[in-house]
Image (cartoon, rainbow, N blue to C red; front, side, top):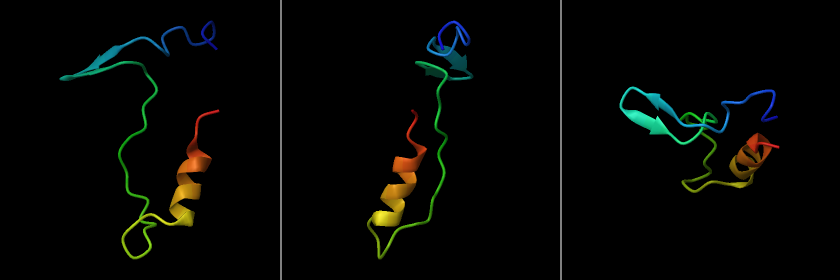
Length: 52
């Protein structure tokens, strides 16, 4: 992958923020809480998003 995307793991400046690499997971709300804390559905959502 490094050869195909040589800048993937190099830092990048975005306005006032320096990112350590170019793999970013933007903030969002999944709205899957069950009476407050995360439940099994919410945990499954994040497990499914895991980078492989």
